[in-house]
Image 1 (cartoon, one colour):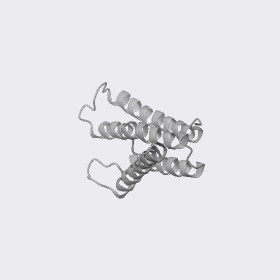
Image 2 (tube, rainbow, N blue to C red; image 1 turned 45 degrees about the vertical axis):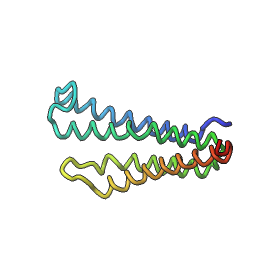
Image 3 (cartoon, one colour; image 1 turned 90 degrees about the horizontal axis):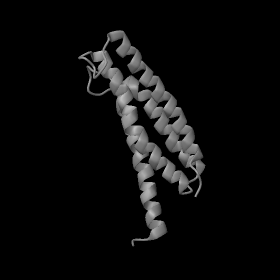
Length: 135
């Protein structure tokens, strides 16, 4: 078993992006004087959701990608999953619009995120049954 070095690259990049989103929330809270929740402010609510969406999706995606990598998958596959997930998460905040349920960017980024998580999860499940059989 190997350490998930490639996944670590994507985790690091996403960690920096999360710090940027977190800073945006903090700065806006300071400007508006709102300590908790969003105080009914639409812009703060949007900024909080941008941060929240990343914190909700990244842990599971990074865990399953890391498990795929640790299971010996080709590096190109890890880069494909990590790269698609990274791009999806980078563009997703721009697709959030409190006045519209869905935007093309939001739909594409949500779909790409889901595909990466499903592919990585299926890969892990497949490897389990190949390695351990149906027992």
